[in-house]
Amino acid sequence: MITCDEGGNIIVKIDGDAYNLSNSEQYADFLLWATSPDEKVAIGDDSFKIADDVSEEHREKVSRYAKFLIDYAHKRQAKLSEMAKVLTAEQREKDIQKFIDRLQSADA
Image (cartoon, rainbow, N blue to C red; front, side, top):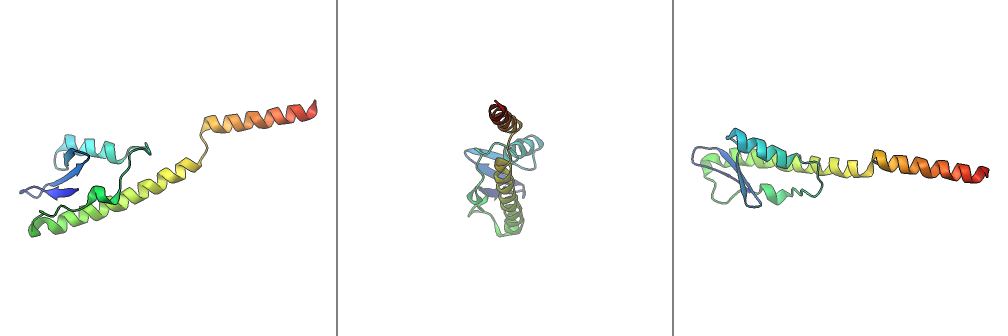
């Protein structure tokens, strides 16, 4: 959920954690979470739902952040899905070794 404090600072609340994006340390922690390459870290659209209590004064700003973060979450998911289709080096080595084994058994 995205909200805003009285000073207009963007606050992202996810899974019991709150990240004030104006605070360098919390911003860094948020980025580490949001950019995690671990596909187990699920970032859904509801993660960036706008809080009902955001004032009209800050609603436009919060809305822009929400749109940006939802777009980012979609791109991240697409990239993770794409990466899952690519074989790891270990998988490629196993496939090559199986191919070599088949060639050697065919020659025997």
